[in-house]
Image (tube, rainbow, N blue to C red; front, side):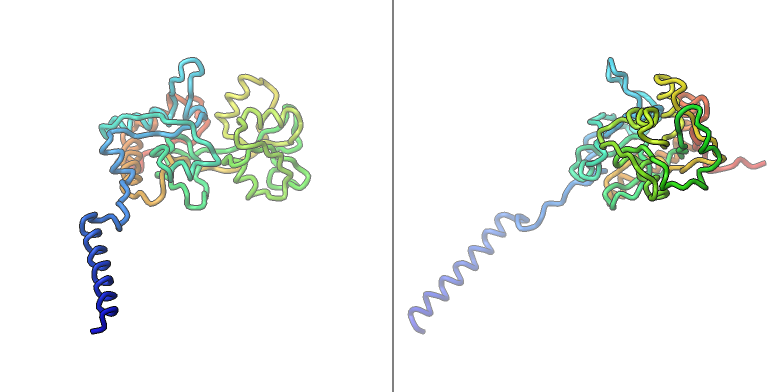
Length: 288
């Protein structure tokens, strides 16, 4: 055999053996490490990390103490208690980053009144725990919209909204021809409704409990437009990371239990005594 060829073959064999040996010693170094699922992380840590946003009567934050209360807060804490977990209220959510925040495990779930909207597959939802009507509101004393929402020339109407907010998103889809006066995502609902008071817009869409709280601070400035039905009804759920079936199924199971045993109904009796929201009910009927 040619001496140079023999040397080349020896080098090739040595490199090959070194590659096999390195991979054998490092085990699965060339294989991506299996990422822990949300379910596995929650169960192993004993903690459910909840992202939240303020929206009475679902999530109420005391400005002095930071203590949280409300339908969604008590529901999350009851679910955690039944599962032998504790709740850690990690951070307020940002509407512009909720998909990224779930994907990056900033929190395990959005434990609030999350409207079910298409979010490009970046957020999944538990089964709804309630259904929320949204109505239209305008300046006090104005009656030109009453019983006419289905007949309006929306191209002549200005609508107040907040970028990324649920009611605004639906309004843009249902009445795209309207003139929208959109505030940035960091704005509060009160700012949006104030723009209607200031006549920067003709109409704003919110759920009745939100308007009730706003009206306490700015009484008799706005009024509900008379109509025989809500502008829209939202499914309301907790938000979870997509493709996490075990975690979602666990929360769905608990949501059903909370409805069946009457706990959910008791929360609505406590926080929505005027019955402004559509109540959940158990999915069964007693025999006659």
